[in-house]
Image (cartoon, rainbow, N blue to C red):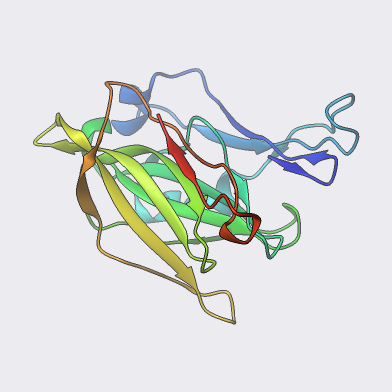
Length: 196
């Protein structure tokens, strides 16, 4: 993620595969690093696992999404992720989001989707300031072949609400993660979202 010359990627580090982590045999850690010079130099990685996951509530296999996070027009950093809760395996995970209003110094978690069986999500800001999250969906441990679409909205105090996810028949998904980006805004004459 790039912010006025600053890049704020998050990444995970572990010595276990995702199935072992979901089974409680290991821990997946989440880290954040920063570059304020367009990626020429980077800060030491900072572990943020316990700020962006809830292992005390049985969250295992908490994974920031592959792909990208976004910066909203308000300046908020917005990340999507998925988590296996309790004894659920990776095909029975749930999506959630986390965000920062101070460029990664502190984090909030929210929007745990009650639907079991979604992961590898991607986010895009909509014209009204809400955020659409698009996720790969499973039914009974098998890919649905469609994308699950949810919309998140922040209130003025920064609290988040979400719509129930719905399968979108126009967005066919591959076996691996899809991508969704904003090409431009309506006020620029090109309010276009690109999906691939």
